Image 1 (spheres, one colour):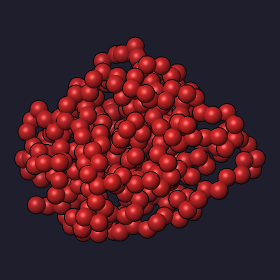
Image 2: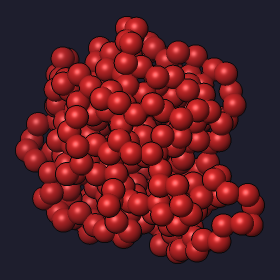
Image 3: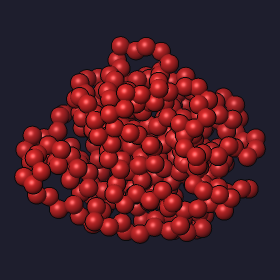
Length: 323
């Protein structure tokens, strides 16, 4: 099997075609199912010229988190962030549409190693929080998920290895893989800033093209950002790889506070996650460059206890766990 990395957007020069028949037509997300409409109200669709190419999720009314490898320019009228959606190709009264005022990738994001693959988008308006649009909580700093933990991943990405796109938001479960094992399977190409997930059995199950930037969810908090996977979507021999959000909590708060207060007024220690990365292995696949799961290249066609509160008003009062 060829093991090139798959950058999970639908765009960018690094998106490679599938190398052979894999997966069954009609499968979901890869191996999942259609989500109950509006059951995940924090999910965001990031679109260019009306076409979905990356996922994201609402962390505060003006802020969406996604992957750094998703090429999202700021103040570009062709780019929009859609909240409250279920079916992207149908008009829905629940949808709220925003432009991107600021697009901030982590300063140490490395497109070669795909380390520090996290980006914050400041919307050009505040989302109205309701039953269709809610924020999701972030984890506590530097917390890890134990191997075997079953999480959920969501997205509007391909539902088979043939480039099929879904008509609605899809979901599937994935089990956390021990990082040392994942690093071995990926021949050293997994850093301490990453989480790995794979199908619990031989079923092809996981993320695919167009799922980049989407959330890895466990117990109503988001722990990971969809980053990259193997050439064949859902193949557990090459686990899906996610950015480990808990390593970036200080950096996230630094960015949000910086845009809420005049330059120099708010002092905040960015922490080691913003000062320097914990290090990463090389991420170049044996058959070529990284393959993410975002979606700009080759346009194939275009309640639950989530936190509804606005960001805390006082400096330094930003919370990661909703408490």
